[in-house]
Image 1 (cartoon, rainbow, N blue to C red):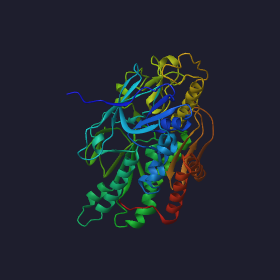
Image 2: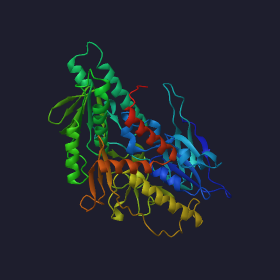
Image 3: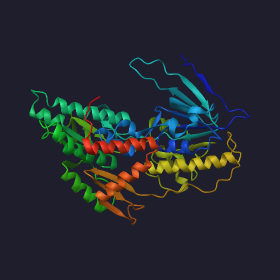
Image 4: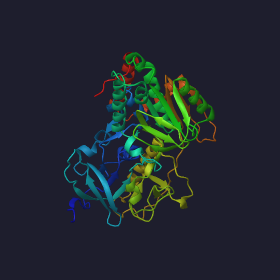
Length: 454
């Protein structure tokens, strides 16, 4: 039986503004929408979430250092035209297909609840399409990861981690729970030694040292954190900073284990050498890869399965389609390497493409197939600004080298922690959320973390 198709938005008419359709509300898509000139274009955004997540501070929400609203920025605040302009919209939907020849995007509304209604399907015609779908966590095909581990990519992941952590703390205090079961419930295992895994481990160890030992004194000796990494932690950082991070994490009680996860069970993980590691909370942070939707799109692909783009972030062999962020990569013919899946890459691509589309619109090429004669000039060039990671306990790393082999400033300790906090406070998108973050930090410093389980 054929599912009925609802008409959606048809092609733009003469006298109407050209329509830019943006798929995704991550760093790339939101920076693009913020920079688009809404006097030239109507903006239509399609995403299963109506906010952007400020991911560098997401780990802090898991243990109550920050509240969840502090890291979520509504799309209507990022691009106000979506809320007020008659031709601009936000659709809480998933993209399920693409017809580049007809300039059509097929969508399906997001539903919620135990017995959801059938999702509505609809189509949107575009003049320009920007694919900013991000990426999904990589599980390397390991059995049990999807079922038992929690990722740390979205606000609801952080909420789930916080609820699970506090639940385990309270369950372990119940009379009759065995010593072995207490140790398992309060064993937090983090898989992946990149910045996200290290920052979460640091926040968690700080939470244990400063809050758990005071408020859960009956079980304070049972809770511990293990960080599992196949190679070196923070492999992209300077060697000196990496050794400092190892020393600080170990000092704060984090057990570092080098190994490869072979299998994930409901209450334990099994490493490739046969070692069994029981856990009460398992957080998976091993990098990202293309989503099933990105794999299914009828477009050229870059090495690694990302949507292929040229030097101007255009998808080759189709008209009016661009791709930015973690889901895109340079095609081999450009001779450029695939850029890392970092927020700063996505943000810079979004800013560049917004400026490019504004120039195309001002030159009269905003309509579908209207940019065929447009002369593209300055290609996208990425310059790495450096990396930062917090370790908890007022310690952080700041690595300002442009590459792993390059030279530049590399700092560790309290000064780096101050730089880390200052930098991210200024990068939070709105003054509203900057105020939230500053107040949350001050409240945590004075009164400790909020350990309410809601």
